[in-house]
Image (cartoon, rainbow, N blue to C red; front, top):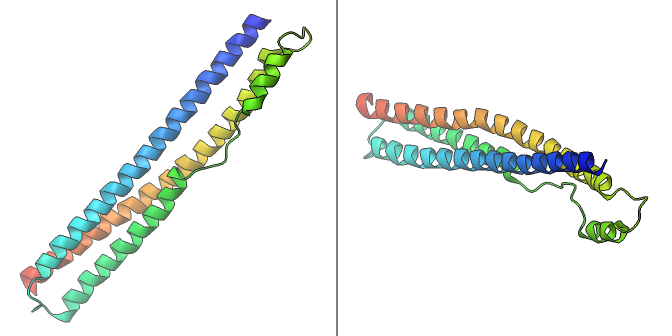
Length: 168
């Protein structure tokens, strides 16, 4: 029975480590996405300002470029807000440090199945991590849609600014 419980414990610990890796990947994706969006926003602003140039363009063109910049800025802020839900700290079940000391005390007691108790404890931690990773993945999915809006807004701003330069 001990060998079977040990196999189960190994599987639970492996899955728990895998959930940590998933957390790291989701966090990395959200940070990279936010970094790229921020860089794109900054580049779009530089190009748009240069395209507007000497200030001799009609106020309608300037208003359109400012509107595009505002849309991009708001969507960028929303992206950061939603990404915070991915990389933010979450409460998770953990194995308390004193639980191991308690288990050590029970090693000598024949009627206590330490491995099974540890499996139950680690399963609770795994369940908590999976639930949090589901929330992180959902937030990343929402952030990806906002990310597309940031990129699209910046692109629209650039097109408007360049059109204003060419036709305004």
